[in-house]
Length: 90
Length: 381
Image 1 (cartoon, rainbow over the protein chains, first blue to last red):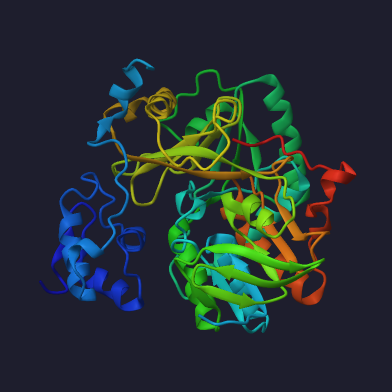
Image 2: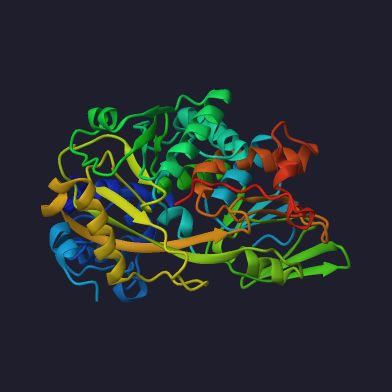
């Protein structure tokens, strides 16, 4: 993995951009997500969160289970507005 | 952790970071910001990203106008690209009463140098060709309203403050504020005790609880507001779309995604709920597709929520608490905290260090509720 390796494919975020934030002291998944947008795209981190988790753990020399996950938010998969709008209220 | 500070700021959101930065810029030393989680983890990082100057009270117009002046040069000042875009706000009127209110608003805005104008539905469609103007009677448009990235703006303030010596402690929760009669003695956290005689409460949704820790009452409460965002699509329209009577705001961000929300104060339970509801997604989707029918196939990717901190007149409370010397508040912004933070941070810093500020901070004092001098804003979502 080098600085040009894409970590988040939805938002085109490279390891170099993430490492830069880790170097600045932003070491939680949430902070990195908020600054770089990694995990904010259509897949909502389903592809990149595990990669990011391992990369942060390796950078901090910690175990993966010591790194808190960022919050998973609904919907589980993207839904077209038209389908939502046409649905029943309950 | 340090054991003594001149000023302890509680809350690492946009208010706390703006105040900390502005105090340090004016030469104040030994400032500490205490944040329970991480910077912008509360309402600042969950807000709708917009800023507008189109309001119905002189107070909000002035605060917003001054904030926009600061936003316009803030990337340079803080040496951080906060992604400023002045793409305008288009506010739609659906009732005669609303048209009358908008006429008054525009008159007020003009008198204060805000370049808003009342326009016809036809002119609104010229600005937003994809807009369905069914039932729209008129609109107001202000081209210098816009949006910034609220996360990056808060981080920018926090980093600039730290470069000037402000200490930021994250994952640090305030558990107790020790007082002696009418003076503050110390702030106790889960990481240690800090001796201080000055505390700034900028705890957002938790402002009331922080007041309780200091033994003073602050008449604000947290209430959930929900929001959702779509996948990015090609540029479709430019300004923020908003309506008070139909209750919505949404816009396409420079990134391409469309972000919007509405308020539901009648049904929301007061408290710290930051969950999301299916009902909200359905209702918001209906509002968005009714206005811009081509959005039907655009997919929402995420919904979330944050707390408005409501005050009795939906205006912020700024200044010192009358029952506790050195206990300052920057709370109760009622949904406008992010957009007003650039100026309120300066106002409070000047008030604390110099005893006064050119803007009418006294009108925002907590005692206005006892005096019955409320500032009621008619134009709120």
